[in-house]
Length: 304
Image (cartoon, rainbow, N blue to C red; front, side, top):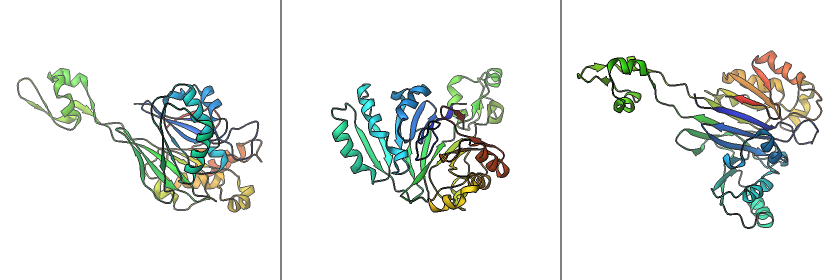
């Protein structure tokens, strides 16, 4: 099975601490790397995570709060210093474009690669990126500013050839493409061999959902069907529920409720308030509702 991993670069919230960096992740899918949010310090964390700068294929920004995007211009400049030549697409709310253009004009002169800004409608659930093996969809969220999450979904793959059975029947390699697509095999003597004897089912497609800053949305799980791993902000515990409601954030328990209703396999908690010296209280609250909850931590890597 091809790698599908999430590299946590930062999982803190707006107020800087010595324990956590602001929000940033790398989603690695079948050899491609996508940066999701880009708070301050993202470049340092990329170095520490050993994710090569040149591997970043595209950037996705969930919203225009500084802890999610203030590291972007510096990173674009560094890409230029490293000699990047390939185009880079930045998917973000349209309000970021004039800000980014102004900053790039000041700090990113002479780049030898193009930055393509792709405005994202945060109010719609839509596919905004697609390649041969993957789609990325928006997930409308509810925060104090325009905000959306992102859903990385593998495309279905073909069945796997059972080489032992193909050799037993003498099926030539030239037929493997058709057989993977569902056709029967044909022996050198012209005998048809049922496809089910020559293949094993394809690996089930995996999906990763990144739900950035948002208040609790009771219907959010409806957009997360088929998701394998869910990252959902859990800024507060139930002890600070009034603050969560005031600032349009979620508690760990609410994040777990979304995971349970969506039927995901794994929940990653993150975007911790600086009020907590130990996030164990958040983890325990979540696990009472959804047992397979885990704390995101800087430089942790999770298999989707």
